[in-house]
Amino acid sequence: MTQNTPHTQHSSKPKLNGNSAVVYYIIGLIVLILDQISKHHFEAVMDLGDTITLIDPVFNWTLAYNHGAAFSFLANQDGWQKWFFALLGLVVSGFIIAYLRKVPKSATLLSVGLAMVLGGAIGNVIDRVLYGYVIDFIHVHYADAWHYPIFNVADIGISIGMVLVVFDMLFLEKKRSQTTI
Image (cartoon, rainbow, N blue to C red; front, side, top):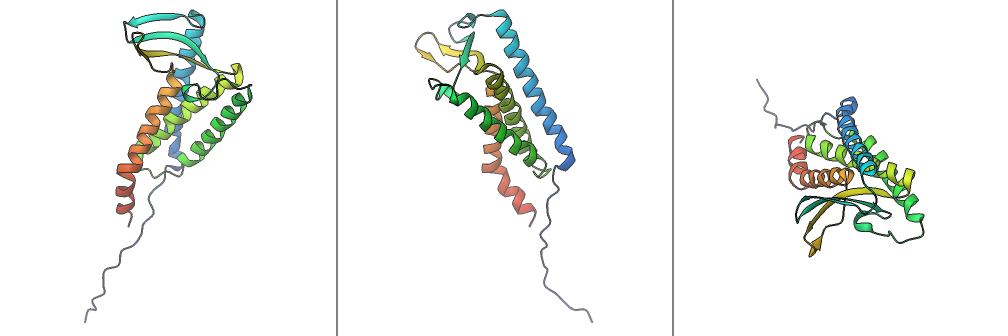
């Protein structure tokens, strides 16, 4: 005689990145290298405030120094912000380095996003520690009517990375958690 038992669902833990997180560290390293090479290039060929028009009237290379954070936040302070933002970048980077090992392997978009933020954060921390400011050179604008704050490759990495992280949080994280029930 067979006994019918109700089907029980088992919660299975997802496989984590673990040692394979090195792939994402490499992505972060690529962002960091591209950032530092581009900054050193523009520092070598331009003087502060110089502009090279690429696509008139919307896109230039313009060498600028940002003593603050995004959009020059706190740039006009007495210098304490250099260490504050450098420390903040190091703390965030340390968290990402540790967390990438714990991210589920199936969360590729999240891992890539975190890696891009990591590379960008370290790139800007290097600038703050070495120079006391972040080197920026990408200038998007419309004639003299509108100017987006000048930025760099690290900022691109951080911005795209955060878009990927938020996209994962909004649309993919819940699906992942449902598949492990």
